[in-house]
Image (cartoon, rainbow, N blue to C red; front, top):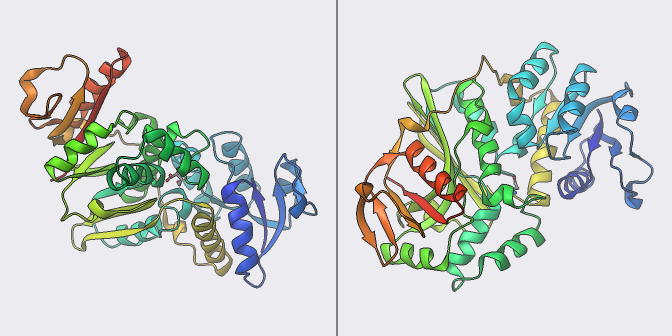
Amino acid sequence: MKIALLGYGTVGSGTAECLRNHPMEGVDLAKVLDKRKIDEIKEILTDNIDDILNDGTIETVVEVMGGEEPAYTFVKSALLKGKNVVSANKLMLSRHYDELVNLAREKNLSLSFSAAAGGSIPWLFNLLRAKRVDNILNVGGVMNGTTNFILDKMQTGDGADFDKVLKEAQAKGYAEADPTADIDGLDVKAKIALSCDIAYSKMIDPDDIPALGIRYVTKNDIDNFKAMGYNCRLIGRGEKIGDEVAVYVEPMLFKPDAAEYTLAGAGNIISYLGEKMGKQSYFGLGAGKEPTGAAIVNDLYDIAAGISIFDMAQCVGKTKCRPELVCHEYYVRTNTEFDRSIVKETVGDNAFITKKISVASMHELAQKIIADGKEIFAASIAE
Ligand code: HSE
């Protein structure tokens, strides 16, 4: 099977390296699309997508460019030309899930995307398997390596400074090209949307998912969490409630008996709760060049072997995310007025715990405060 790689950045070069180190007979990297001059792959390099789309010998395209465009156009064109696709592009896939999954099914092609959520962890792969034999009641967890790396360092590393730790995460190749996508929860929106798409066979628009990130977390907050016996993680979650799905992204506080409490470095821990199978959790490295490259190559080898689990993914329409259906207590610290009627107890001089309020209400309040140019950090308390 001849393959072409679209993009030779961190993930693309990690994929090529894994293919070189762990070859599979009959699978050959024939072309790489990248606008830059890259000596190590100069014999197979092109800057023209048509060289790949119009090459009938290329059976499978691996899209690792990131960003919505031109990735979406290239992937759709590749499927229309009868080529299988492997993609790690969570943003593009989550925005076009219904169209691309259905197009691949129609054309009897594979569209695989293990690396789009969970990095090297076989999360989506196992979620698909669980979903075919059970009713998935909820999905989610820690799905962003960069923010976990930052929170872990801040919580265990003598109160290390936010900006300094972020630079370290960028140097290690964990962060997105624009790290605000990590910090503000946009990366997790795409990953939890894809997870819900798979679990419920209906598309959730990632842009509708309410998200609070960790941009405003301070050393003072971390000290408050420590005093209360919590560790903070950024989570994405989807919960089935009747025929609806409540989806949201927010920081969450965990007690030491939760697996999330001790999750170190760029780790991810993602779980589903099956009605019959119970809770199953997957954890490991959620970001980085080599782990992500390895997940992509595994998808490729499954396609080459004719056993791609992603061929089972289905999408039978769209559904709204309904954050008003779930309620939490929240830790809140803000430098502005707040509706005191929802305060349950104060924490130190400037923070408090709310009574149980809906995720939708908390996120609306926080977004209003942020839009007014004020600061707020809110984290729900895990039950
Ligand atoms: N920026 C992402 C993360 C990369 O930190 O998890 C993996 O999707």
